Length: 107
Image 1 (spheres, one colour):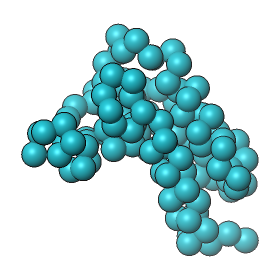
Image 2 (image 1 turned 180 degrees about the horizontal axis):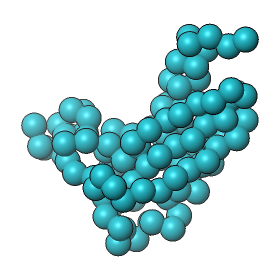
Image 3 (image 1 turned 180 degrees about the vertical axis):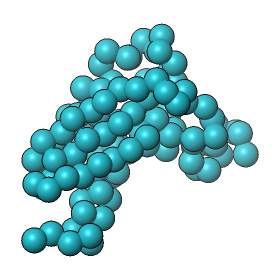
Image 4 (image 1 turned 90 degrees about the horizontal axis):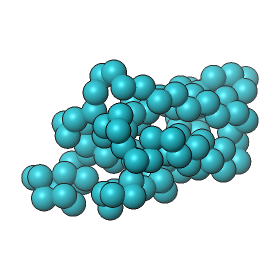
């Protein structure tokens, strides 16, 4: 049976994978941009990612969820990946990591 530490270790690997997916218009990864709202890991290492984009009219709205799915599916321990694209709550700059804000000159 898997304990909380197993899920945390897997979550760290999933976050690392998410950090390889970059916004094509901003030189930052989706995780640090604050576009990943939730990472839910269930029983058999099934992962559900809830994410958004900076705007519903984003030119990569159709392709970015697939890139996220591919990146997370590349983690060896992950069994299945479901990516949910949501628009509520809307994204804003307060969701960005301090690192991302510093990179963009917002700090």
